[in-house]
Length: 312
Image 1 (cartoon, one colour):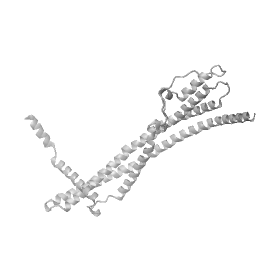
Image 2: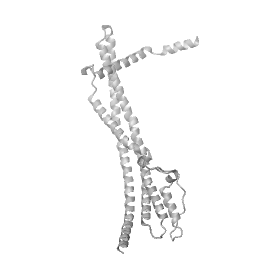
Image 3: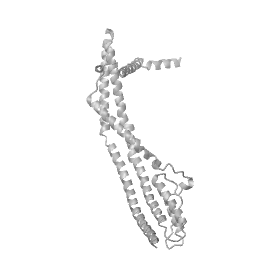
Image 4: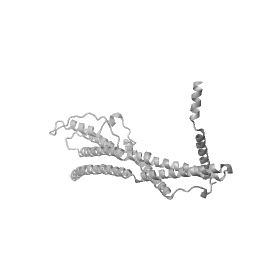
């Protein structure tokens, strides 16, 4: 008996009239939306929203599209191996030949017995990056090691030395590349995505609320138009309430859309992207400029020696 009383009390607390009214509104607005989609509603019977609202809608749509468009490309920075050569089939041992590891241990082995100080062998780093700069460094290190290993003449091996210089240059670029990707993810990608999924999404949802409210208003107008004399007053009251609701929701949406459009964060985020790229490409240009000059000297010397040997 007690549970039955509790059930009766719970049922009594439910506002069935309000719930029924909400269901009715939802059904009427769905019918209205279907009629508009099928073109069975005259244009003059569709409530026109303020021009300011429509202009803001267009601008927010453009802002959303700008975010999505750039994210389609820049989201690759979330994965380190976005430019890693797909044709590389590395075994665990091949991948373990890191740039710094290969260069240092090569020097440690091959400088023994000379007047040059030999560095102590180093242990393999735990993390092996998979990027194009790291791949270039590892492959040129392996190439330099292979050439030096077969040089038994004691003469300077210019190609081996050039490959070693090339590997050292790409080691610096690889480090800059890792810093670049980290900065892009933290200072651009994540805040750029956050703007899309928070403030822009909130503004879009506010617009959806306006659309629903507008459909409810136009559905209420149709109901008033077709209402019986006994229901005229109630139908008129529903139209007035729907008008007030639409005005309120439109004002909220306008405020939210203006807030999104005035937000300076996207420009700041884009600046961070450009700055990170500038630092990376500057570091790459500096490294390549230095190594290219040294390799060119070796190239000129090798070419001179070759021509001299041909003349004899």
